[in-house]
Length: 167
Image (cartoon, rainbow, N blue to C red; front, top):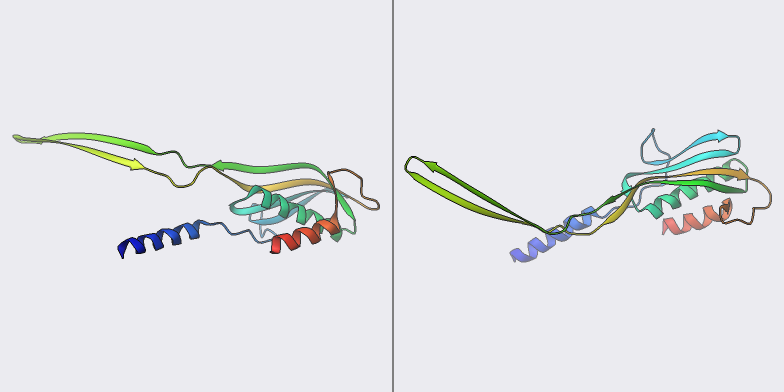
């Protein structure tokens, strides 16, 4: 019975650690989770999507692309070109198993004693990439979309990413 309770507690702890996707919403302040943009020129912006405590890098890039598409459409433009992509990414990893040994001794009057202690560390999980933010530098355009992998149809990107991120 005790073994079952320990297993259930461990499963609940692991489920609590699972990250949920960040909401697609404007950031309430500078450095807060959500999207933000900075206008550089009349048709040029920095678009950033920031996660609350780290997220899958591909997910953050998708949210930044979605915001770039929405912003392009809000400005009455049809397509956008990504000039530069940056990802504030960090690698978190657990170290491998380790063993520590401690030795101690002491005396009290005519009595003396010694002790030895052994500790073992077995971390769960491996290396994981997490990101804090994805930033795109974009230029917006009208008319025929350039035939280039860095040019995106804003309406198609908004529709496709919304359906994929919602499900």
